[in-house]
Image (cartoon, rainbow over all chains, first blue to last red):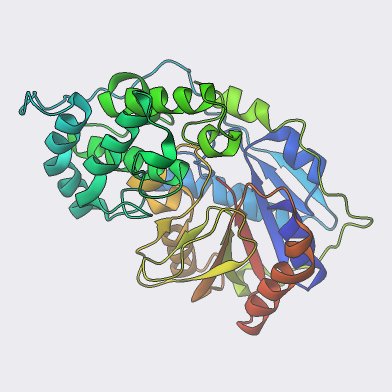
Length: 226
Length: 148
């Protein structure tokens, strides 16, 4: 963002760059920078809270009053407590013959459709895996976790992108199953640690790492600290 | 997994250095046309998805607000944007500020780039200046830059 700020200013546009990582925005020094200590993915802080978002924007626009480059810190922090997991009731097992992750994904389909109807498909399936093919993608990762080389497992795209579609399917479905707006990362922790599909992806990722596959092929299937 | 751990992973990345800090004096905010430029790789559903190291940009129209998250990085929360686009792309808030007369107007077209880039020369030399030209041709005065 800061690189674009420098370029845009040199072309005659006044800019205000938001930053979520203090060391980054300090190092890149945009002409007008506002560090907001908010979780990654939420530069305006709190979803569905117009009052909070307006307060952040108000602080940002104040920087336009400065006659010279300026850096400011927003006075409210939002900190990820590192433990909160989305509280989300899961559908019961339906098909005992299906892999638990496949059965689970099928069971979440009505919730996914309700969430899409309410919010639109903003982060769900559809990058490379359409919603009807989510279970097929999960089955491919099951094969990898069980030892099949990833190129022979039928993964319908670059593994990290396929993984994003599955994660997006689950985190979107969860919005219709929970009765509150989850704090940042709570949905991701729920997906990776508490769902069968999340466990399959992590197992497949580990299997690919153990098999010596190139790091970018498997590393980005999950957040980098996992 | 924790937000602080993900942030720590980026702390030692090299920062692009500019010899001078360009600085444009803005018009009064009440007269300014404001645009949003995000590095969240947003795009409209029918527009081309971002590729892994895509240095280009996509145009985001003010309507329809059917924006899709096309980012390749798994290293940020997505539920905030899923619930409310304004968490990343505060277009509704800008509309409200324009209606109140706090800002002059809201641009009809905005831009999205792909963050998480390690090679920035193409953005510095090509798509960055091209994006600025696009915004200037719309008479944009002020740009809000939002990351994820």
